[in-house]
Image (tube, rainbow, N blue to C red; front, top):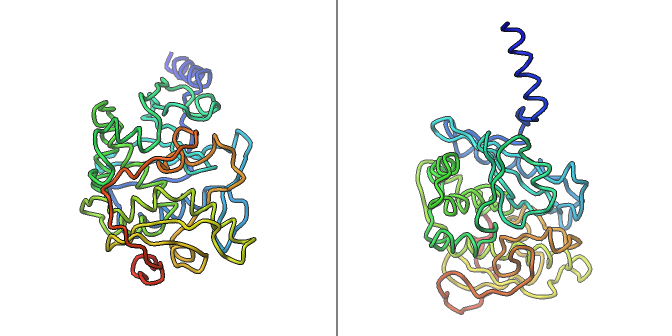
Length: 310
């Protein structure tokens, strides 16, 4: 009788395809340290397939077969509750997450995502896209007012595990910045790694990096045919609140900070939709800054080595 029941459950699991899929990368907060978080981000970067390097920076693929389009990361909070997030390998964009029985997809994700991800779960669509503007509107907060740090990630995992609709957008903003953005930029990685036991609000430096990943990626790839010079300067904000111009690949923000490049051969629907000043939901637009107006003082990036040499 017991054997028959076991076989029945096994058959049902196979039929429904509910057996767990092993994640590519895992991070457990219960034993987290600064070093283990850095190792997690390193493993996340390495899990993404590459299309060579430009100025020694890995370039993401511009296209990939459906079976390799997404990778999975397991995140475990202090209480042992876990969620699994799915990341698009073409742009490091989080498209969905699962609690094991229920999965939640952003609006306007790649069409194949619901067909390939979290099969056997109850799939639900979130009431917003993964674009920062949409998430901030849903959260009723700007990113700079939402705390980061590993304790904030713990709270975000808890919120998403139990799916608190009112707090989910804020939690997703924490999740995106703690994983995808940290993989893109070493500066963001280190800011979070240095806050293992505390929370902090992201600076305009962090916000400007997040908003300009696509632009930096594009200009760095263009520069290889222009003797290292950018076709169009990229404006960032340094820790002193100054607007700084990045004009060539000798800048430390290029040589030491950015760790992944969005492939300029990527089609519109694979572009980084989190970049609020360049893309939203896969549709190119131009938006004004979502943060406070900063001092309009431009200086060369080389004068702020403390910012780019992290």
